Image (tube, rainbow, N blue to C red):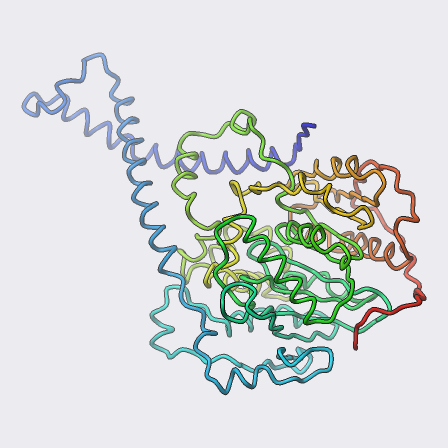
Length: 513
């Protein structure tokens, strides 16, 4: 089934027009100079350099040809330079320079909920202890990317300080899941409300972290225990070297989530993933279906197959294709690291829409979120490199999830939340409804929301997530009407009424307060 998303097409066309306009302006600036130079040489009988050009040849066409050749060789040189910078500019992880005493104190148990491998931080105390040694002033001054784990921590703390619910943070040691060294996953947890209900576990998307859920945490934590984690290779979690094979890298991500679950002593939980986190959440649910009470996907990446006629659907200028080819070996967010100290300003200029979503958190919310995103991605791009291995072009996965959905057990309920203006194609939601006629599949599209649907329409997003959680709380979702439903588009004025009364269950999950 071929589906067209007009919002995705318009988004791509607008980006292409903007880039093409910049290229045309650059060409218009240089073409008169090149044309004048060619004309002087051509009209000078003593030069004799361009004697092979026929008199009928258009000088402006010659200028365009030389300009394209110059741009081509310039792009080749830029490709080589950026490849070298991508390899050597990112600084080493400061966590490797900790002393033995700091490592021992990090593993000190401080709460019965966690094992001895965790380090607890209580955000409500107002301070976060610095457990990592700082490099000297000379080393900090010489770094091209002015970032560190401590700076990332402070940016995260500032964003999460606006969350009203009490938050606890912990490094959860999951062992040598990837590589030979122990890996640690940074985890925040909120409230112990209704321990009889399965907790909600949240996985972020590419280049993000736990703090970007700040707009949703209060609303979601009102009905159950909530966990949000920095995926391995992102945020404050460890950054090991993943496999360069797409399936192996995916398995490493999934196994890290499973090891985290074991360390947290969770029996079953509701799994929510956004974008790349939705892709990994689905892969986890396929491999460990008995652990997932409900799978919630927010604008998930990597589901549809890459169209064979992509170039015919979306005509792209040749120069854009040349640039894309030159940048293909680089990780998706290389520009943030290349920008160095100007990285936060670059984020503010390139993604003002994303920054405005979080401006309500504080008066200087723009700078806070930009700094957080910069520090999340200015460090060693471990998880980003794994994403690069799994992707086939930025918008598609090498092994699309739509082909693996039949492997998901029928008793795993599935909710999908899309943004109507997102570049992610929501047609797979319709396809999955047809592929799973005897399973619970709910597809919702929030009108006016983009890819970051959780931030664009936080109230509607929270209501949809709570609705999915309520289905799980009421018992086996298979008792509900599972006939295939059409996708629902929520208007801005749509209100969702939920009955969230406490549920009595015979057995309680193995959770401790």
